[in-house]
Length: 220
Ligand SMILES: N[C@@H](CCC(=O)N[C@@H](CS)C(=O)NCC(=O)O)C(=O)O
Image 1 (tube, rainbow, N blue to C red):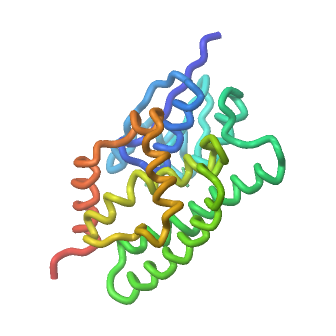
Image 2: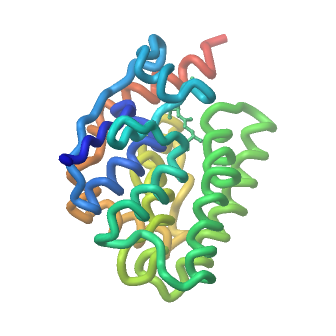
C-alpha cells in the first residue's frame, strides 16, 4: 500500500519546522496543509481535538500530535538516517535536551520578546543561564547528535532560525560571542541543505514578529 503522509503546520511554526526537517532528513514525501490559526480548519480540530495545535502528522489516516512525539514516531517508522542513537544513555541525553529546550530555553527566550521592564530583565537572566547549559553541552561536538544532526539538533533548530529575527525586532543581541560554540552550531546547522531549503523567508518572519511585538508592546 502506498504510504499517505500529511502534515498540518503553519509556514513559520517552530514546532512544525522541526517535523518538516525530520521528514526531509528521512526523505519522506508528504502533503503539507498550512493552517490559519485564527481560523482553525475542521481537519485540525478533528485530528488534534485535545490541544488544537499544529503540528499534526497524519500517517495513513492516523493522527499523531505534539512535535516531540511526532519526531520519535518518524524515527521509529522510517529507520534511515536515525535521529536517536542506539545507546540508552545517549538516547536519554537527546531526549533530555529536547525537553529542556521546550520547557526552559524556549519559554525564557520568548519571555524576552513578550515582556517588559523588570520581567524582561528576569527573562534575559534566565535565558543566559539556560544558554550557558547549551554551550556547555556542545563542548567537543559539532552537533548535539555528535558528527551528524540528531533529534536535539532539530529541536534546538528554532534558535538558528528565529533568534536573529527576535534580535532584529528587539534591537539587541541575545546570542553573542559569549556563546562561541552555539554560534558555530547555528552556522553549521543552518547551512545543511535539508535545513537551508526549508527555512521560512527572513523578510516574512520579520514582518510577522514585528506585528507580534507591537501587539505585546502597544505604544503608550
Ligand atoms: N507542545 C506543542 C506546541 C505546539 C504549538 O504551540 N503550536 C502552536 C503554533 S507554533 C499552535 O498551534 N498554536 C495554536 C493555539 O495555541 O491555539 C508541540 O510541541 O507540538
